Length: 328
Image 1 (cartoon, rainbow, N blue to C red):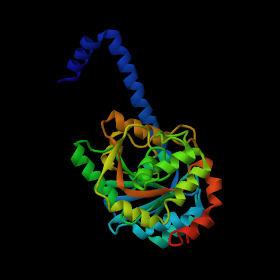
Image 2 (image 1 turned 90 degrees about the vertical axis):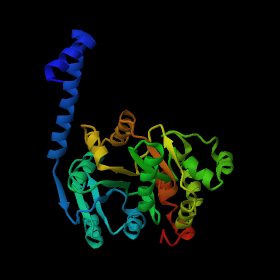
Image 3 (image 1 turned 60 degrees about the vertical axis):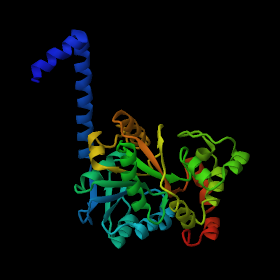
Image 4 (image 1 turned 120 degrees about the horizontal axis):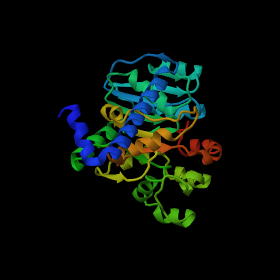
């Protein structure tokens, strides 16, 4: 159908006024995407490239919680696959310590001047053109053995079983408003949780698991020893569930074609505004019929949400006593 024919058909369907306003909306939508692209690409950065051109890429947002790196980044180094590139990304800052850590581990390091996770993630993906499967992690995520393999297997199995390819898949995160209910059920902790903190409700925000430091500590005490709990979960028969709400993207796996299809990770025009990338990605999953799947036999540990962080930092010594192999 020619361009003129499409216009005539659109006018017949919507009327002249409807066609006019639809055209204006489309123009502004395209303009916004164009301006965002210019903004993102014009942001200065420093990139130390150690990529081997692998099809699997691990991107880690880091630079603000150095006290966790000996545990979280070490777990990535320990369990990364040989056929995977790793890139540590610092939005809004440069860390000499991270650059040296990446040099020691054979990882790439990207420092982006603009303090925007979405911009930083998009830049990292552009700088790894061969990457197809992309794992995105935050620096406060502790991973388990076979984490990457199990999550990728989960991606492929959910796509096959549901006939709907995922927008992204995620592990069971212990400190998370949606998947914590799976964690509690798998380890028989539902009754005790309800006695201590009230009803188990799934929601992205405004729950004890988000804002109560004692809840975070209680869950972590029941998560340790971490690798033993993760192994126990991984031995279960494969199972998954769909998240129909917003979901934390602290640890996810997605494919390049999807993130390119939706125009990359979104970000606010003001630097330092957090959460836009997560919110918009979940919206993109819905609008493009790409579900969010939680993989039940893959465990990851989320250290805390912001209201819990100060308290949880005081518990690191106790965590080292409960699990010296991880929190050494």
